[in-house]
Length: 52
Image (cartoon, rainbow, N blue to C red; front, side):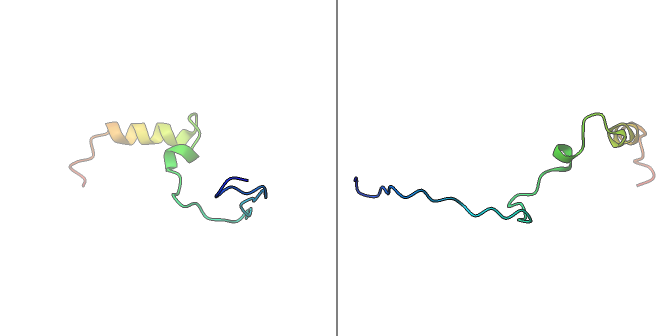
């Protein structure tokens, strides 16, 4: 056996409720055909700068 190598197989523990190290973005979580994407586009094109 070479130095630093082991014949023993080790696995990382699986925890179903484990939190993400880096949370996914909303873009990754929302399907492409979801209504919220259309609403977002409409709001972006409304020109609400005066209201802000």
